[in-house]
Length: 304
Image: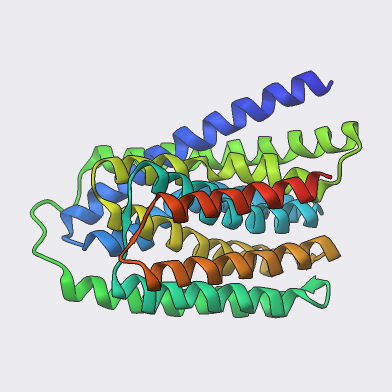
């Protein structure tokens, strides 16, 4: 029954949110003990943790042969991250930017989104193209690791058992919640006569992006805008290169025309965000409202 599927979606979202929160908390504490700078933590540890739902959902959908949900989840999550979440957080508190975030990470985000569009334009993501995306992410992580080691301080307590337990519990909840969300969302799409692309772009993307929203808002309210902005940019890079790349390696994906159009819209949004970061010292309410409005317009166009 559709009613049960809706209930399962709610349960899955809670599991994804709580699981990602536990994963991020444990991983962030370990990183802080190692003396890793805040921006690097946001771009790597926190970004990977909050992207864990996207990893679980996208790979699960790929294995189930639901390519539209796989691609729509990543594209939709990135649009949501740069629209509703980044814009929404800026409406709550102005977000300061740094030269490193703009010149290194922002440019890579634009380049990775452009690469995604190029490999998807023929309507298919092959295993080789997935390996190219994932390999690019690995190179990026090496660069960040070097940056982190240069700014690291001596660790006082590099290991704490409760943090390891948080990681394991969080990972289990994310994987289980991701599997439940994909199955339930696909059932709803079939019952309502809605395309899997629209379901993936809206319900699934919103569900898997909740950890990014919660983490970024909490960091911004605490005045840690470096982690907040870094988390969103890093999550988008992880999604475009790591999530879709790994999913295509595991199971080559077909990309519908709507998927190509969505990737093109995402590229435009990414370029706009980079321009706003570059031209403004802070991302204020006006810029935030613009990003939220664009995200709402994209949802409306896909639902019509």
